[in-house]
Amino acid sequence: MIARIIAVGVVLFATSSMAQTSGTVTRATMLPVFGLGSTETARVSVVNVAPASSSGTAASCTGSISFLNASGAAIGGPVSFTAGSGQIVSASLPFSSAGLSGTRGEIRAAVTLTTSTASAPCNLQVSVSTFDTSTGATHLFAGGAEASGPFGRH
Image (cartoon, rainbow, N blue to C red; front, top):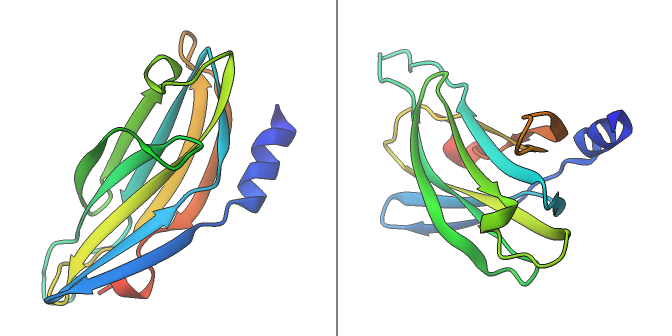
């Protein structure tokens, strides 16, 4: 189990795509594929680590967290969030709600961040974990992906 946590933590890479319309930038960060067992819950957490700007504008990140099945289709609806400085927001998906058959399936998650050209400071960090639904024991943790990049930081 320790090897699984370390290996995934080392290889966590996020891919991003951007769309820009009328002063807003939307950036989607796709997290790596991971397995979810029948006794597990998946959780994606985001934290805004940006401080307030030098002019006093409070830090704030706005976006959504989505889970996707092996075909790339959304599992349920996205979970919208607004995270202030230091605030952690999470979205969870128990196996029973994932629409998977058998005792294990592959899923992935996406974090979409929306900022405007005059937005508040935002520096979003992302992690994904799986844990035993009954005991809460963590089975997988991968962190350190940054969803904001140069388009979200101010």
